[in-house]
Image (cartoon, rainbow over all chains, first blue to last red; front, side):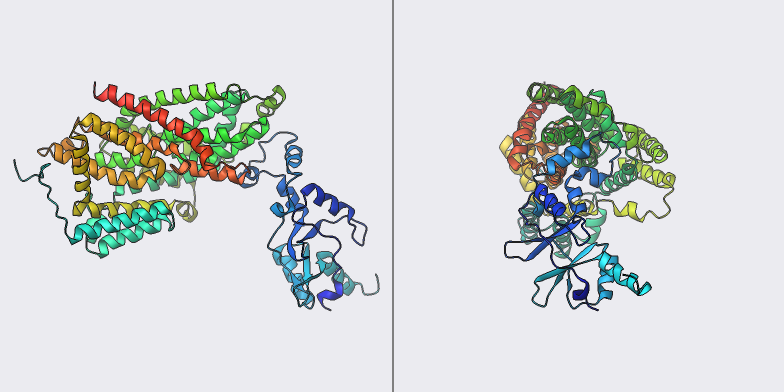
Length: 157
Length: 453
């Protein structure tokens, strides 16, 4: 099996110019096959090229002031600080907080390579490119896990 | 007249060595100011050229006080950095900042004034960069809690750290360099500079009060947020904190008495660094030593050798003759010129290379003025002392004039930017330059009244 056999088609995307408020809404209303909202989405520019990836941790980071993150004195804060900082972050753009250096795989890559990247880079999803470096799908850590469960329990679905 | 150099007959010759050394010096300083290459790299290259081109031999560069590295400065800096590196993670700075905000009862202007005073005191006893580096995050937190603009707080802290650092021998690198060159001790600085720094801080507080009293407002509800903070949570290692404070106290006592017992400040600081390393129980001190700011240290080492080269060939003597010609030997005029020129120069360029150059220049001027004196009688000639204080005051206070005038400013601007509050060059100048002019003006009156009455 190759990545293309287990990947899912691109299901919604964000624009770099989207505000975080818009991004959160897109992620909420776009449903995965299991009916859940998205916990991360690819970011495509006007030409449809992959320019980044945005996960819920990136959105959390937007609400976390640098001085709390870098100096780890999160113990000395006030009640309601997170909500207040989040309100300030609502109109920041996706471009400011997405991960611009996206790790990708090719559709003909092996599942073993995928599994290795998921573990080594601590990722949840990997955009999949074709030979022409165009985005054709996304493979999730759950998809790899599913392959392993099939090996353990071949008869169940 | 003996064979001592006199004001009329310079002993140097404008030969090939003179021009070679001057070119290396000039090129190095231009590169340092341009910031195209890191200043530490420029300094090392310039220094090795001075030796490689046979301006200085290695013995002169490494071992002679007159032409080479001032190891007193180097070891004082390294030792203080080690002590601070061990102390930093304890959370004492954060504790002091939160406590200060609570003492200010959550009032924005009162907090700004208390932060200014705390920053000045910590900068006088430790280094400016560490002080602002550790106070700035708490400042941002408090400003967000009170929903007030954080930029004025951050600039006030940078400015206060530069003023506070002026007060003591260890407060600011120019003072460390001047102390070592002029053989001045810790108490000399306290006696001559601390009183005027206290006056400057009072002026700063008055300005803050008048300027921000109306602008900085918050609500009772937001004040409660600050009052509800628990500063004890900031303390991460209470045992190490006690050890650090004990050693720091010991070092400060050592500084106070180093002149009396004839120890160099570097000896006191090295003892403190060794003791705290021992008490800390660190088994593998690699990371503590690695955190010493080696670029700064090598910058100093290189500069000392570069300046040593131009001292040896006579460029510095040539400059001192020019300066005496301008002021016609009038020491009051020389003091005033030195004060303002140092302040303006330090606002525009790094004050460390500036002071490294001015130190031997002042000594040379003294040799022109009092050719019969030598040793301490020369470098601490009663009529020369105001020049040292003018240099110290000008070089330290000038740092407030622009965002690149002092390392503390650079740190503050960088941290503000990272937190999403951009401080433009002119924004800093708008706050810093008036403070610089005000404080240098106070210094001018002080020097006039105290030394030329």
